[in-house]
Amino acid sequence: MDMRKHRSMQLLWIALFDLMAVKKFKFSKITIDQICEKAMVHRSTFYKHFDDKFRLLEYGLNQLMEEYWEIPLEKRILRPFFWSNNFFEGSEPHKLVRSQQSDDLFLNCMMTYSMRLMKKDALTFIQHSKTIDISHDLLAEFHVAAMVTLSNWWHKNSNFVDLAQIDQYFQRLVNENIFDFNEEKEI
Image 1: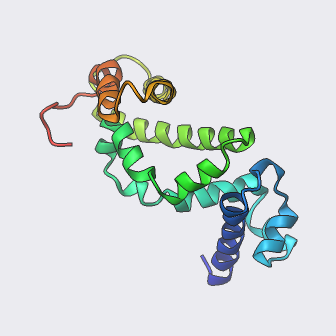
Image 2: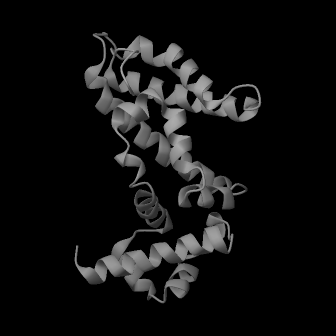
């Protein structure tokens, strides 16, 4: 990617991040004009790089999540709650999500983004699955749905169960029935 394009895209992302995380403007209310003004980039430049603010958000989330994807896949799949919490606590993505808690549009975008990437992880990992005559796509969907369900349950009951216990529940409910692995193996 050429330097000018990269610079423009970065300026736009930094502007959107600042509007959401620092100024605490709701993503749903932020306009392209506000982003461009903050970034000191012409509106036509915005549209050279992004179709809309949703594509800009996705671009920025990909940047914020780079370190998360450096965590080995096996760890992300087998102990998703521990590793997610370990990465997110106090991070820039965490700051962003906290600033947008009251914006349903942002939360829906985040959920869609996260679920798509979790499914991609699960599909990649399924190549190590037990021989099951169920579609890998269905298994990945089930894996993601279980993570979302457990996450929602844990947020409602976090004072009763810690992250290690949630990972154990996840292991017992989902992973041991899908993935062939040695429990004694260091994760």
